[in-house]
Image (cartoon, rainbow, N blue to C red; front, top):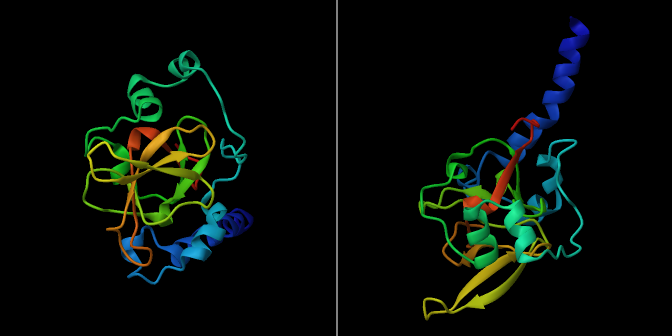
Length: 188
């Protein structure tokens, strides 16, 4: 029994350290988050044995291949640069520690420590995992916006705005249907 408790403590200690270090979300940090540290240590929130892809080598599939892999809602957002309705993603309420990955190719994009509640109805993040995105200007609404895509599969994720919280001032506004959450505990 003592050995089991010791093992549980050994497993729980790093998780508690991550929780204390990063908090559950940016709004709990009071703006004192070290972004460079968050970005450098993002793998601390990745569950061991997670089914993620760490290569950024481009994934090129045909439209028909994508339609076989993705749901119609995912295809609309990722491949046709659509937008899901606000307040429809269960990821808005996700509070567990973990990593958000691209639903199209499993590339890690954000962590729970980068997420905050923007009140917009879409999962929002104040920074990203380095190298996860390519950006381009979008003039759909006449005024320019910065659109971002997964660097591996080129799937549309959302738009980045300059109205986010400290310390970056950024709001990476993401379509929830374009993400999959991988909890730190390995549970789904």
